[in-house]
Image 1 (cartoon, rainbow, N blue to C red):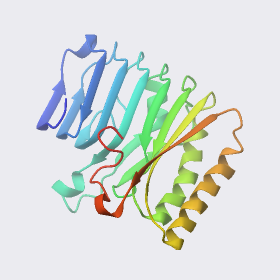
Image 2: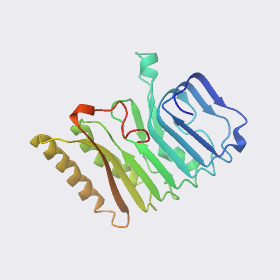
Image 3: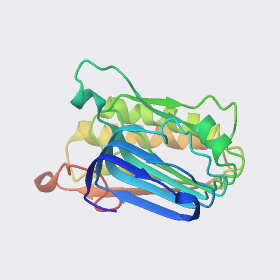
Image 4: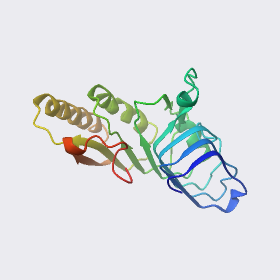
Length: 220
């Protein structure tokens, strides 16, 4: 499903659904009734007001891949005085999807997102983790290192970490210094996890085509 807009979207009788992929779509209400056989769930660059996925209420015991990339709350747009938050709860995901092996989550500082990383129910089966950012607000990007470590602490058996980011072609000394500081802070933090294979993937933009409305091109 791509480029769609719904007031109400419910997946009923979904016991046999194995894959659900949504991108660049909008929902006031998104609900999946059953997830008994759901193995792959991807929601990319989409907006939602309410859902039973955040915090996770859907029992999806066979879910292997969960990709949440710029899936943000729009309640503050529909109701400007509403201070409700979009909740991404890793504890709930761990309980509802104990076989999850690949998780992709995005660090979004522009939306009222409540990241719940208490670690009370660790993601025991998770072996691959994608994390990413795409905004040129360096104070927030530096916080990304601390945020990433909180996620890592919830994944005791992780084998591979893929870090996605966006940088611009620039000769500005301050920008380059900030980029170096970010890279150094990430490297220092990751040195505490020598058992994890780490890959950095940066999308390079020029001033002429920066910034994109959404990060990482069509997919990221």
